[in-house]
Image (cartoon, rainbow, N blue to C red; front, top):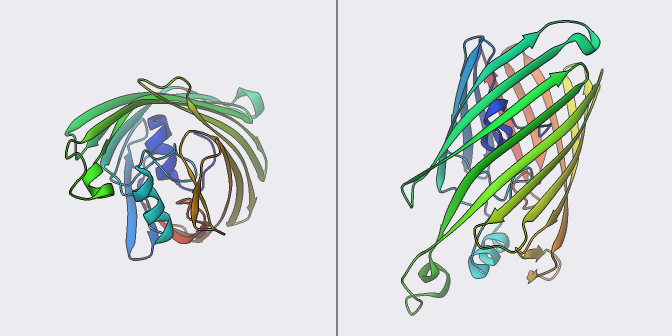
Length: 279
């Protein structure tokens, strides 16, 4: 699923991004007093991963589905979107041919299930990733849902009935590896069951590899019905097009450990720290 600095953000969107190499990995993203974790294990042919972290309202994920007062309060307090789901994903190698240049070919299939802790639903999805020489591509599709509580937003006089918003998420990406430079374009479509048109996110990402150091920059252009928070006025705006910028730096400090710093990963214009262990 392209380049996103965080392996967990890729896996929660496209299960075929789960590593199948014979490796055990643990990733954590630290923000304030909280940490989002992902565990992954491969055996050389098949891999599996689990993460209770959220995909929505992260830089590389779909927009969140929130009631406006809750969204505004969260932005004012610089709090990340609270996840309702646990993602379990698995991937397998369908084809692999080692070679130089265009002769290096691989194809992976992934499946995933998202368990919604509030609705007790299990929603499934699938994805493909492939490599052909310096080119790579990815595609995924899954169904999802979010429960809204109007009492939390408007108080005890609000309708106590809870609303479940159901939607489909479809993504594709194409990338180009040029030695130390990686360029990637990703497109995400989020279509509600009753929506007239989808919410669309376009991501343009570049990563530069300098020895043990990886520097990543990305631009997010979102066309959606969700509001945007104006950091100058502390008010919500309802323009469909919203643009954000991401920056990340990772360094491999040991053969089993990488650390990094991320800017705007949670779309709060915040700074967070990432740590990855692999054995």
